[in-house]
Length: 344
Ligand SMILES: Cc1cc2nc3c(=O)[nH]c(=O)nc-3n(C[C@H](O)[C@H](O)[C@H](O)COP(=O)(O)OP(=O)(O)OC[C@H]3O[C@@H](n4cnc5c(N)ncnc54)[C@H](O)[C@@H]3O)c2cc1C
Image (tube, rainbow, N blue to C red; front, top):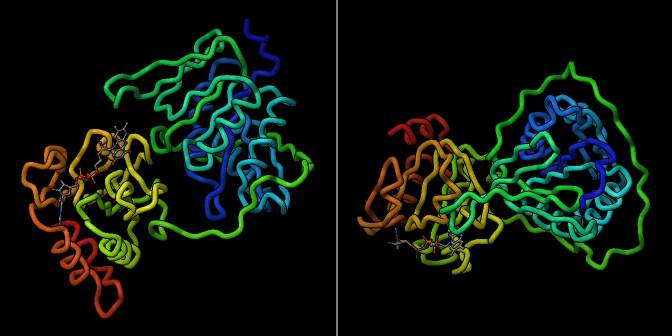
C-alpha cells in the first residue's frame, strides 16, 4: 500500500543553463500548474546553485507557489552526486507527492539516483502527464521504437517521479503579478563527493540545441570528424546550433550530447537542415515538431526525403560550401543574406 500523501505538492526540480533558468524547467512548471489546477495542491520549484536567488521571481511568475532555494558557492559547478543527495534529502523532508525533472543531460543523470535513494519508481522521457482525482500520475511515454504510447503509473510508492522531454510541453506565459513563498534551505556539505569536475569542454556548437531556431545536423554521411568540424564552424559563424544522428555519434564524428532522436534530444526548431542523414524512424522521432526540414543526401531513395519539406540530392559538401559562400563574406556574417538564403 502506498503511504498517505502528507503534503500535496508537485515539485519541479529546475536547472540553470549557462547562468539562466533552462526553458525546460519553465515548461515543466507550466505543466505542473495544469496538473494542480482544481486538485487542491501546490506547485513547488526547487533550484540548486550559486547566486540563484534572483531567479525565484521568475519561477513564481512561471507558476511556482513555493520556491525552495539552496544557494551556495559549492553548488556553482553542477555535480550529479551532490545534487541528487541534496534533492533526495529535500524530498524526504518536505514529501511532495510528485517530482518532475526535465529529461536533459542533468535531469537524466540525477533522476534515477534520486528515485533509487527514495526507493520509488521513475518513468523516464515522458511526453505526456495527467493527474486523476485520486492523485495518481498517469505518465505517457513512447515505447517500442515510438510505435506504442505506454501509460505508466506508480501506485505503490511515493513520490511519483518522471522525467519529461524538453520541448514536449508548451512554455507557460509569465505572470509577474503572481505571488509565492520563497524558502532558503541552508546547504550542509556531506563530505567530499566521489566525483570531482576537473575541467569543462564545450561540445557541439556554441548555441543550445533545445532552444534553437535553426539546426544544422550531420549524419554518418558526413564521413569524417573533419567534415563535422567544418559543419560546426559554419553553424557557429551563422549562429545556428549543431545536431547529430546516432550514426554520426557512433562513428565518433560528434558527441552524444548533441544526438537528436529517440535516445537523444527532442528539438523544435523553425528550420532543420539534415546533412547525410538517412531518416531512420528513431531520428525522425526527435525532429517531428520542427517547422521546415531540408534534407541533403546523395541517395534519392533515402527515407529522410519522405519526411522533408525540401530535398536536395547531392553531396552535402556542395551545400556546406554554398551556404558558406552565400552567408559569410570576408569571415563575417552577412546577416541580411541569412533570411534570404533560407527563404529560397
Ligand atoms: C532503440 C534505438 C534507438 C535509436 N535512437 C536513435 C536516436 O536517438 N537518434 C538517431 O539518429 N538514431 C537512433 N537510432 C539509430 C537509427 O536507427 C539509425 O541507425 C541512425 O539514425 C542512422 O544514422 P545516419 O542516418 O546518420 O546513418 P546512415 O543510416 O548510415 O545514413 C547515412 C546517410 O548519409 C548519406 N550520405 C553518404 N554520403 C553522403 C554525402 N557525401 N553527402 C550526403 N549524403 C551522404 C547516405 O546516403 C545515407 O542515407 C536508434 C536505433 C535504435 C534501435
